[in-house]
Image (cartoon, rainbow, N blue to C red; front, side):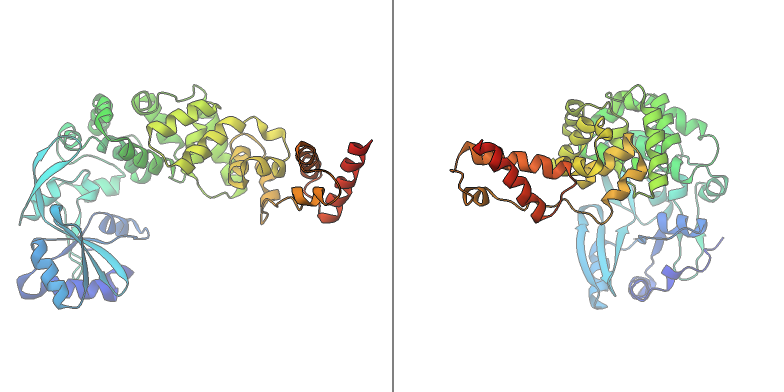
Length: 397
């Protein structure tokens, strides 16, 4: 079988790389996602390449062709080539020497099948000659791709033992490319080995979980993960009523044509509790910004009756939008379109200039004016001046 014509195969940068690596009996093939997605008629983002040439030889050949090379993963045989503005990862064929479920010790190989055998799923172990389009498939990936089946290469338990993150990758790839029932052997293996997720770094778990939540509609696969006990291991805070909340969120996102936000979707899986949100964010090693955002959604989920601009003034536009998508009226977020939270056009010095002595009274007046300014939907300076007059008048009574 051959690849159909594809735009990426004709890119000038790729053509230069291929020419450099195939000269003098060299070889290079596209592998993984570029081949899979081309066959499915999907857009191709990254074009990863594999070669039996050693990294030093790859670097020498590319440098001779005036192609920039960055040793991004040289210890594992990977370099990044930059040609005509495009970035391509090029990896020397490898075979696993030792694995512990978190990382692998590899040795370079010159056998394409050995390299394919260390990959996770059959549909990701497809190789194609970028010139002729001829596809190499040693493990039935073409049949599985046609059937919409995501299956591990060889023995599923062995593949998972090599890298425990493959448990979560199975669910993500099944959601993206699977049709019908999950592959029985692969599914049984991820359920049986789910406790091994505890051995992974929190960062790797968070990255893969958020990728799952970033899928266009992950409701079915998230429900499957819950039924399989995956969240008992990696997200024990999962709310008992998560399914209804998650469904409502996805429906609201579609109704509002809102961009997908994995963090918002993570919030839908949790109780409306800031402390729980903080706990989850800390365990997943989320950034400070993401931790604060998740906590705000947990704290203010019940504030949907509050006018949305007032809520945005209190917690920020993004958080207010997410609160309404989670639990409110998706139409309400239209009030935030093109709007930024304004600053109160009043300073303490303005009040002092009106004859009020600096001190607690200035702060009290400033706060009182701001409260009414927010309640009146942020009127301009003239109305603020009127409010100041009112507050100063009352202070003088």
